[in-house]
Image (cartoon, rainbow, N blue to C red; front, side):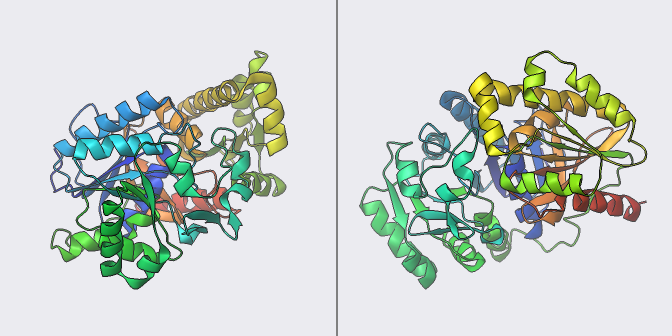
Length: 432
């Protein structure tokens, strides 16, 4: 058991989403630990919030439910006072998706008839208005997310999207109520409950809206949403006298070693980050899924390429491609098969890089991050300072720690890779 009270127990449906949420909680003053999957042993690191990172976003529905309930049972054993189901700020869940079914299962297990669902993250351009999700100025289904290889989002209206996933009645907590404050939200929630609504998409277009929603949900046993909704939760615990002020929540131990970047995401943001790296003449090795399928020794070639540069400069290994290239590969191999090939290759590369002395890893893409941390044997992470909104520095717990930045494909500025590596180096020098 942890040596300090665990107040908030979180379940994230992918690895980068987990670090995104953990980052938000650390910024709010909560000492936070992220586990990779459900731990096999008690947690012995002081934490006020614990985030269990699952790889359940795109797995079969029954598997996602079982994993989420196992995570909930373990978090309940820590004595958590509130629970949080975290998914992507771009929802990333088709009609066959797992958000609705997992939310239903958690509500049943926690014996609660109602939960809000709010993926808004205004700091990263994700807002919800009248139930419609926007990415910047564009509706979700025009933002590039309609081309996502695993979870194409073709409808911006989240009430419709979520309702197609669940028999639970889905409603809308409208912006009119959110804007008027906590009491208006309470009245709107009561009206939704009378109408038989169990899950309610909540509008939010600013951080203040998220703080207001958080305050309104202070007594809820379960919340669901993106990381933004967690903005107000540390303050709730502080006002209740449960969260003492602390100044060391972002401190991380120093990690010496070489550095590398691994990118499997094909999102627009990651495409720009890969191009920025390459256009600056930095070493990069492309992972070709068709070459992998043909049985070529791509991993061996990648490690040979790394040997020409490691010790002098970091190397990028990427499978990131434009949507038309991804579509062409998927047509030949199928989306699941092509994705698995790339993940396995990047995981193998990461394992061999660690053997070559790499201790700083920047990883782009939720599925890629899951594959890499599993390959590296990482079981838990301490969460440190933010690199970009939604992406913190982290250091693995246990012997032979690794410095890791696990980035959602859609997050980060164009120079994110360089920025992350620079911050790793600064932390290394600071802690010596």
